[in-house]
Image (cartoon, rainbow, N blue to C red):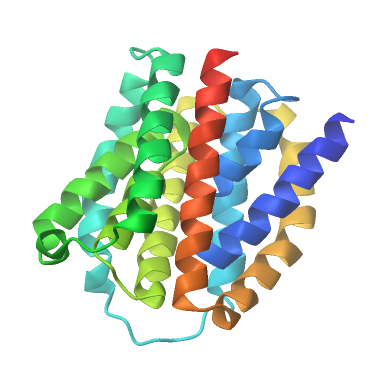
Amino acid sequence: MTWFIFILGAMIAGFVQGLTGFAFALIAMSFWIWVLPPQLAAPLVVFASLWSHIIALGKEQKHQLPFSLVLPYIIAGLIGVPLGTYLLHLIDGNTFKTILGLFLVIWCPTMFFAPMFPRIQALGKLADGSIGFIGGILGGLGGFCGAAPSAWVMLKNLPKQQQRYILRHFNFAIQLFTIIIYLCQGTIHKVHLPYFALIILTVSIPALIGAQMFYKISEKQFKQLVLSLLFASGCFLLLTSLL
């Protein structure tokens, strides 16, 4: 049963990651939390998400979007990751999950019914960097680096191509840096290796399918999907914080 739940979670999360450019950790942990201890699951989530990005990036159509679009997020996010890993040992896990869960549960319906905020849409790279910094901290705290940036790019009402471009490249950079930190800290052990191999086998095809499906959905469908995923993730975080 453990392996079945692990594989099912990996496949669904891989598909969602390929489609939206984020949310692997949020989806996978909703399955894995029931069968794996956090110390084992955390490196697996980061590795699987990173692998999904690598697979999906190979199938991404070229939109000639400038890398400067995502650069402020990445620079600030990389600064935030070590702070997040440091705070991980100071902040109570349930408190963190409750705060983030409440934010997502309140924010998602608000965005669904009232998505236009002209002043926020006019903010520039300094604001983008601030959100990237928060995303880096959240990534170091619990692997949720995509939560804040995904909310932000939707607040700015960016086209879906720009949203996924920012989320995909930001999450890739943050997760790659996190893997490096894990290796330096000795967080990854031999027990992780069989799971890594299984992730490569089970995530690749769903991530490819998700990446191809992205070009078949509308702007409205993309927005509804992202909001639904974030809302469900918020409910999951609140639920696990109470258990």
